[in-house]
Image (cartoon, rainbow, N blue to C red; front, top):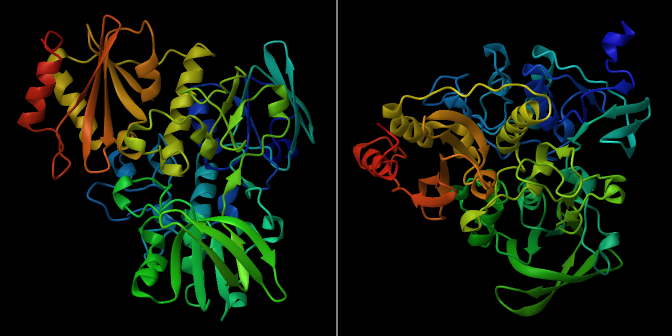
Amino acid sequence: MAELDRPFPPGDYPVVVLGSGPGALQFAYSLGRLGVEAAVLSSDDQPGGMFRRFPFFQRLITWTKPHAPVDRGTRAYEWYDWNSLLGEEPGHRALVPGFMDGRSYFPSREEMERGLLAFAERAGIRVRYGCRWEGTKQEGDGFVIVTSDGEYRCPVAVFGVGMTVPWKPDMPGMEAVPHYVETRDRREYAGKRVVIIGKRNSGFELADGLLPWARQIILASPRPARMSVFTHSTAAARARYLQPFEDHLLGGGTFVLDAATERIERTGHGYRVHVSGTTTPGEMVLDADEVIAATGFGTPLGDLPGLGVRTFYQDRLPAQTPFWESSSLPGLYFVGSITQGAVGLKKFGIPSNSAAVHGFRYNAWVLARHLAETRFGVKLDRPALEPERLVGYLLEEATRAPELWNQQSYLARVVRLDPPADDGIVPLAHFVDEEGGPDAVAVAVENTGQELRPALYVRRDGRLEEHSLPSHPMLDFRGREHRDEVAGLLQGHIG
């Protein structure tokens, strides 16, 4: 019975996965379905990762639409359900909407946590909980993962430990400011002037939660807030948190400032925040009763930098290849929100959605397939396509594939040519940079900031050509105009 409660005793395993948040759960599930065993270790006592605590004000910004234009549980429904993990069996799919109470199509934190717990239980994902990662060593061609329970040896180590370390910039006085994770009950801010440093999701979340209580709220950061829901990027403040911006426009006491914080001074009963305007130059002094640093998180990398793992983004993320492998330490991979470290092409300046479940769940699924094939000899199915079906198949994917819509300009459907065969979903950056690859075509969805449209990347004889296709008001790219254009681009390959 003890072994059932705490599987994976110390020893040798093909893969060791650290973490039990959504990224680690998705990866372990997908890899297990391909027949590769992974020992999953977590210092927590149950699954959920950061969703066991955050967001602080209990409502997510990623939507799940229980009643969508497609049937729940289908692949197409994933476009409308950004919070469930990906399952191969009906009982493992689209679990989060089953826990939602209908008050919002943005799930509560508790509903999200319950969905993740249900996925782990129904899919039978075994995790050794209460097992703390304490160190890492290289040994031969693999790694030794040192834990509170003992040592684990593996050729492949996968870290799904999340971006969980509170991060604050190095500036005078910032050490005296509480971080987002130290936010108190909202009633304690009643009648106070509050300065929130940061204008991304966590900053707007705090402002939204405190709006009925605080006398005045000022959000300050150097860059303008990106309000457009059209970007589909969780890097921007989404519709769920736009009430503070509306209050700013109405003159209700909230201010959204494009200003860099220079220093913070403690006063007798509060703070004095010195800022410098960016969009509109000028020095300002903000007096506040409370200041909160909504400045983000970093990755708990432990001793990995000492082993050679390169970092960037002020050491908050490990640098990664398109397949989420450490760019400087082969054999060490990342899943979950850390996969932001593989930045992709970042076309039109728009980042991936790898910070959120609806992006990184696909990264984990793709990585599991990649490792199963390249490291463990699993033969993946590559279904043949009739040449006359090629054009319709590519345009159907551009129109309906949730992987392409939720990871725009980041993931692509690839089809080998001569004869046509489906190569699956792969990172677009890998396809673009792959040297010596077979003749193939990749289809992706791209966002120009003005419109959403498909793009084809065609590789022939080692040369790559990119072709942007027209947009469509109903986002349906299966009509005659698109078919004729794609047929012309693939002339000679479609029979």
